[in-house]
Image (cartoon, rainbow, N blue to C red; front, side, top):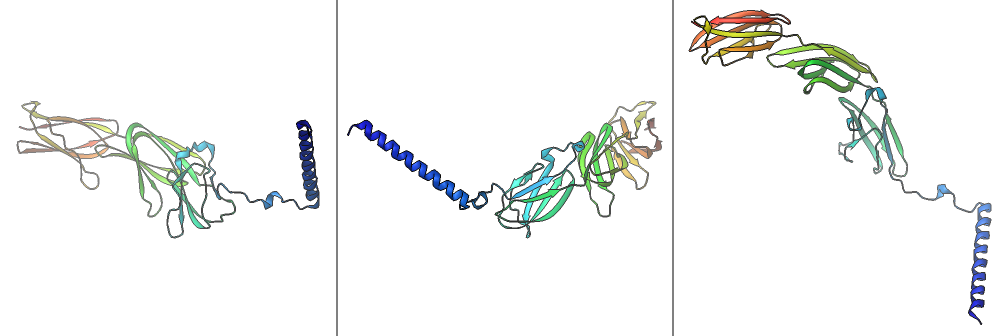
Length: 279
């Protein structure tokens, strides 16, 4: 038989088999015997959806949102997660989920099943606290609550942090005992902004011999007298200029074992010259 006849017969056979297969599938479909999508097992990419709902006005960065997941005995079961909507796959079980947003922390318990996706939303009661100063300072924030611990922030001209809603005492600290405290209330989902000017005065210390600057190695010791006596500064030359908080002070000058004392008061935005004769 010529080869082209064989090819025709083979093609006809394939078409016949295809038509039979299509007819069988159609019959099974209408009889309801075809498997549905629900019957086809799917491989889940994750089984726990976490989410933190935060207002845009807070300008929260993904790196500010941190998650930790632990078993009920405290064992960490996943690496720390970041971002507003992380997803993770866990074995069946009950877990403790911790959300941290800046200085805010919240915990929830969740039951996870391997074959289904569990959603765990958080609505953090958090606000942004922003305080500016005309000069650089070390910042400390303390919640106005019994037993609350203070939290320190870096040396800068601005404190900018996320905290739980509530009342706070904000303290700005500078060298030589300079400090200023202000109480502020933070509302959830809102920005609390303030600008402070740390009150200070300047003090010039001058030691003299024969009505002229001493120009010799010597020591000064400056104490603040308000409340408990505290050391403020200890310059080691015949003259020095300090910036201190308003209050009552004592300067002690010591040259070759000879000691002289002078008490003085500093007011806000004043310049005080303390001259002590060492002869």
